[in-house]
Image 1 (spheres, rainbow, N blue to C red):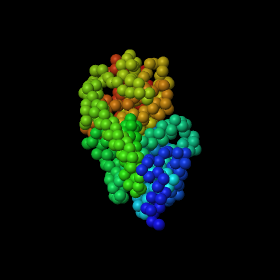
Image 2 (cartoon, rainbow, N blue to C red):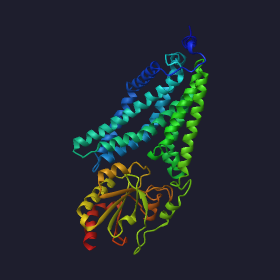
Image 3 (cartoon, rainbow, N blue to C red):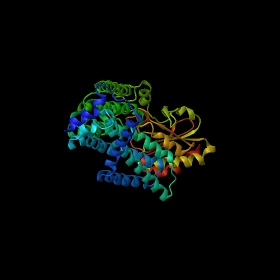
Image 4 (cartoon, rainbow, N blue to C red):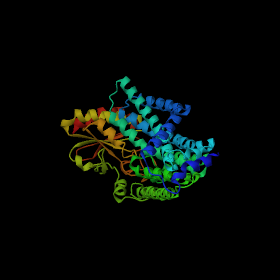
Length: 440
């Protein structure tokens, strides 16, 4: 008896009807998820990726001044870039496995009944194996910090793990779905090329095309569900019956994909990215300039709790305004120095404000918790308002003409510039702050 004949025999009782989701079906789906997870973590590729990830995590956690927030940030960045490209390829390999083994029709005739549960379960198994690698990387960074005696916060690692969920899910779905739908392993490679290309052409494409920022998470989540549902609907051609179920999956896939594209379109035209649409407030902020003997450019920017903070909130106080980025090692040192200064000169009315130039809205939170109440950390919201440089294409970076990060501006009580400390002379910050307080 051929595999296709056996498939028809097993499915005969439910022919023409979508099988109900029973406890048996749920258990069968869970077994397939576990089986797929095992197939991945037992393979050499899993442990090679895990070992490489651990090496990167330990290296980043060992850098001078590395905090939990900084180490977790680098693990997140490594996961949504390098690991995500591998996720596309691994997802494609999982989709191609049944075709390679010539077993798809027989597998689809298992107690699951319809192919939908199988496709979703297989996808989940691959995705969970990749999230396990992320967890291993974060654990390695935490252990390295514990061994080194560096204070660490579990919240920073949990934040990084959650931020990896949607991007890695979409990366896995791209490889898995494209390979299954087009029945060609090269189709999955197209998804990998997309993931590689977007960061490389960042200066020329709207940020909505980048699925890694945390604030974009609804788009990759919806697209992931839509792609996997579409795969389930089309993959069901291997069995007879359950046509109504496949039609419903097709409509659901179209709905989720359309919703994901609509969310991406909304992000593109939200005004945060000048390549798509300019926000008038952000444009006005970017048009300001820091001039001698004049008040420093004002701003409104979100903090770690997504509350809007303005420079006018510190009227009449001395201000240390720092521009920093988590990708620059010296930035962690600047935030630490600002924290010490805020505590030391609290009675002198010194306000320490750190402007993060990273494009991800979730980056600020963990750093703000580590810095404490003495340092106000906000994000320079907006992209492509300048010439494409990371620190100058955002509105405040343009207004203050920041050429490199970290850069610190010391302002007097009238908000006029007293000193500008560039990244190459950041060690003089403590002495400059002491002078500022003494003279004011």
